Image (tube, rainbow, N blue to C red; front, side, top):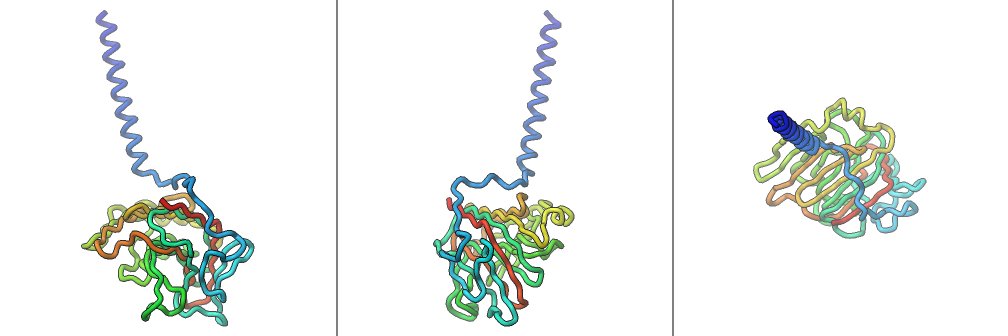
Length: 256
C-alpha cells in the first residue's frame, strides 16, 4: 500500500514536471516564431497579369511584360523624381499584401502602403507622387541597404525600422526593443539577388510586419500621436536618378 502511494506521488511529480517543460517550450517557440503565416483566405489578385487596368502611372515607364508589372527608366526616358504606379482600388487600412519582386542593382524601388497621393507643392515633381510608409525594394544583400526596411517616403522619419528590428516609435522617437530577428549572415542566405523574392506585409492597427521569402524580418509599432498612418493608398515605386528597372508579380491583397 505504501509502495503504491509512493508510485502515485512519483508519477504525479513527473507529470507536473513534464507539463512545466511543455508549457515553457511552447511559450519560447511562440515568442520566437519567425515563419510567415498561412495566406489569408480573403486574398484576391489586384493585378490581372495582362494589363494595368486598375492602376494609374506614367505610361512611358510602366507596362506589362511576360505577365508581370515592369517599370523602367532610361537615359532617354527618365523620371522627374520618384514616380509611382498607384492602385486605384481605394484606401487600405488593416490588410495583408503578398507579391514578388525583382529589380536591377543600379537603383532602388519600393512598395507604398497607407500612403497619400501628392498633387500639389514642391513634392509633386510629377503626376504620380505618394508619401507614407514604404517597404524598401533593393537587389542587395549587405546591411543596411537591403530590401524590406520601412522608409518614410517624403516624410521626416526616414528609415523608420530596419531589417532585424522589433521597434516602437512614439512621441519621444524610435525605440528598438530587439535587433536580432535576422543577422547579416542569415539575410544573405535568405535574399535572392538577381531573382524573384516573395514579400508579405501585414498591417493591423498600429503594428506592421514585413516578411521576406517566408521569414519575419521586422516588426514595427507606430505609436506616434501625429505621424502614425492608419490608412491610405497602395503603390509601386520607380526611383528617380540612375536608370533602373523593377518588376512585380502575383500581387494579392486581403483587407480586414
